[in-house]
Length: 450
Image (cartoon, rainbow, N blue to C red):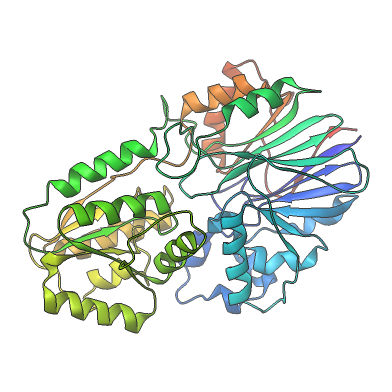
């Protein structure tokens, strides 16, 4: 059976992930993501109102025109998890393909919300839920199957999809860390990865996220970030001024920890910002997390400002607002607070806890720097980098290669500078660039089996 891989997006940058795998006449698309930094550098761009071709030209979503060179029919669109760099282009591109969107329950719900909030293209693809550990048949040949393997990442309900073919398995390895003691959800299923590496024809190809390939050691568990956060907030227990926290709104485990520790130090937590309300509200509704019944979640601007007024009236020392804006995004809640555009007044000595790391990309770094400077000018004290990455460091990569023993590797999810670090790592394990280690660019086709 012919096996061909189209590397469509995410092979020159972090963002706009999209890869297609053709097995015979059947094609499966993995991810359809947005490159947020390409949107953020333009003032007041609203992607909901823009046409897909304009967004492609801007570099914001994948240029999927290479799909016309794949001789087969798309049978499924499979987002690995709910981050925008993996699902953010579905509302722009999915309507071009007569195929269902197949994902885990939390991811499907986020995709559904995205499609409903933007009806520009009338995306009507069927939405199919599939749990980690389950398998479905692809196409009519009866020879190709799609399996979801549970992984741990900085968002719940993440998987690595595996396409089983007569020539071996294609494992799409974006995004994960090796967490054996997660705060929410099940540990990464390394036992299943080892089985896949040794059954049938083994692993024909492993497509790997190489974000942290240059970092030594292993990525710590989310439990490490939880304890760091506990220590930080408990140290503020006697502070009688304002404390504000910010983290990735999609990081439900981290939000859960913030809510618990706020209560421990005698403060009422409140979640503020549109995406904070969206992700936490969805996770609670689907029973992925159990928040206190009186936890306030407010996304609409007027509701947020009303909440800020209440906090100022009742005393900042009684509350812990958990807000959006950890990357310094211009329209996010924390940035508005830093500019003095909300009723919440920062005073000298107030604490701002960043339970997030700056995404290493120039636009984010510049915006975060500006936000921190503005907060500092109002007297805020910043607690930085209370976080663990959602991506594997070097030891995780070595363990995955040992488990899967892939015949071919395609590094992804980075620019060439970071891809080079993964290439060095793989070559240390006996792979050779140009033979079984394939460095590629957006828009290329790689023929693995002719």
